[in-house]
Amino acid sequence: MKQVYLDYAATTPQSPEATKAMRPYFEKHYGNASSLHQFGQRAREAVEASRQNIAKFLNCSMAEVFFTGSATEADNLAILGVIKSSKLHIITTAIEHPAVLEPIKRLEKLGEIEVTYLPVSRDGLVKVEDIEKAIRPNTVLVSIMYANNEIGVIQPIVEIGKVIKATDQKIIFHTDAVQAANYLDCDVQKLGVDLLTLSGHKIYGPKGVGALYVKKGAALEPMMFGGHQEQGLRPSTENVAAIAGLGAAIATISNRKSQIANIKKLRDKLLDGILKNIPKTSLNGSADNRLPNNVNISFSGVEGESILMALDQKGVCVSTGSACASGSLQPSHVLMALGLSHQQAHGSIRFSLGKYTTKEEIDYVLKVLPDIIKRLRAISPIK
Ligand code: PLP
Image 1: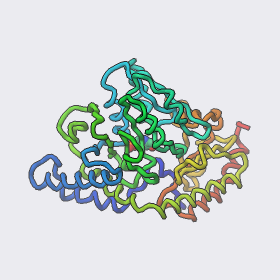
Image 2: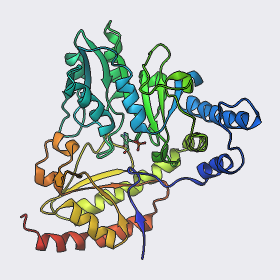
Image 3: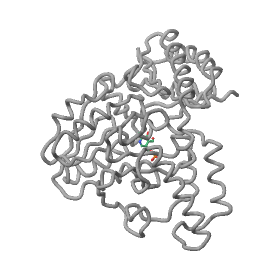
Image 4: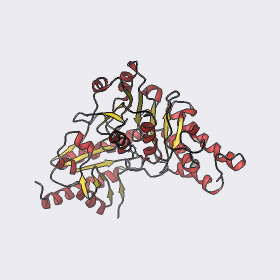
């Protein structure tokens, strides 16, 4: 059966470059990067070479790059590391990834902090003026994602950074750039951020590794306590192979212009094909301020899960925005924040393309999808 993977926002296949960079650290150079002998030195070289690649990508110094076990950990560290005392205020958005929202909600539940969850427009965009208005004397952190994982909408990070820096308060600005890294400029000097999160497995690198950029002077408290690794901010023995893979993945991003143009062309073909050939469909999130690989569509009168399963039977792998929580299907908090009804949110599918997506694959999806929707609508109790 034909297999079409259109779930690059969930995870990307690992590139041959990343796999090649990792292999020696499983098989030959298995030392602990903190050991002083030759085995340790080889491992340390790999960790620092990767850090150099990331520093170059972000346009920061190597001392400002910290490896973590995932982007979830990096996001948690960005939030929990900034909140050093109670009665502080955080500004975030209603559409952040759970890796940002959940640690914030936890602090809120413990009564440690006040939170402003900024709304977004129907297009999924945060208003810069809203941030200005939300800043309070006790605001210490603003956390706003660069690009959304469900709808691909890109937030005006540079403008938000300017508003924050224009205050005379010491406010830390964090952005989760996990979904943005493949496609957008992540130069932290241009972005004006103090903290930035990356993940290995969204950029053709390995799973279980992430990185946090921490601007010099933005002192964070660790979440874990132990050894001296990562300047004491993230103690535990470095996952050398994964770090080497992340470094190789970052290095291959730099040459991406023609790749992005190709992905965008295929994405537009998919989007146009769906909107033209399948009635009662609509795009979720801004058409313009959007990652070039993302299409998120509401199919009226059908459950997203049914579409996903039917597509899977045809070999096409996509994702829904819904998460199965405690036995009941919760609609996506992102789609609900856009103002969609429960039904529209439940009938949504995310197609996310990547560098290995081909025109033949998109043609195949456009061939099988209209019949699937027609068949599901015919048997659907939702009209
Ligand atoms: N942030 C965003 C925007 C994501 O899309 C993801 C992954 O789904 C994460 C954070 C978490 O990344 P990781 O799987 O590396 O913990």
